[in-house]
Picture 1 (cartoon, rainbow, N blue to C red):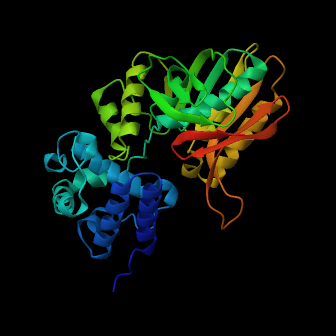
Picture 2: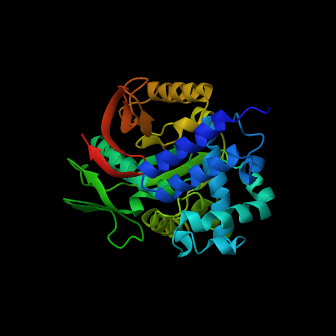
Picture 3: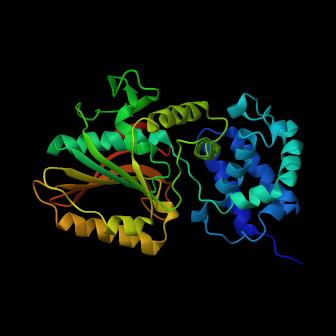
Length: 350
């Protein structure tokens, strides 16, 4: 008898529970249906064959449903559009599931191909944590910013100063921006001020060019379809990306950090958000070592900041917390700036 893919089933169900807790009841239900289908040896068992032991950091569940969502968005699975809120439909698990299985069967090869693509979430809401952290940090230096991001995907968060962030005390950013992030900040807001980004560059193992239709469809497909605010923010960010250039480089995180340099009269910033989980232990160590080496060369006129929004635990059995942290050189002190939702807002500043 073939062993049941327990690791895969756990990964699917854990992802569904995370989606549900993060405001996507649709994906909570859909991941459970997929897991049950895998248990029963259905079409999703066939599509996922060979991925039973993939590490959780490969995010196989998100690759799978991102591939399915892409079929809906680009019209290859028209029968599903009535069930996907992202295409004007209304989710009904019982009614949608037979058609989802039929579409997965018809497009099994395309869905298998999607499993080879790293998930590209491009969560624009995380800019609330990153730009807020940068405002806190830049306030101390008041230099133009050289901004670098690892795990940047389409580089949408590299344009963070072009978005509008609303909070109880007012707002920050262009009032006419097509991207508005509501309830962005709680607690003491970051210092008001301008961010002058002189250079912006992103590094990713599979960067996405959103200036074309294919790239736009790719990044939209990884947004959970019942989260309209996220979809709206993403579409607005794509419009900004087509006007505000950023250089995207196909490179690993470790190699990217190893190649960074400092500049006189500028604040060099390395930032990333929800990237850590996709890196191996060796690559994480290389990123930290590279950042520390760069920091050791920093001076009063060439400061360096490593700014992150990543998950953390207080202990092995404690729940995940999503912290905004910064190490600033000269000095190298690690500071916890705040805590936030995994998609960004609201960010609770300390």
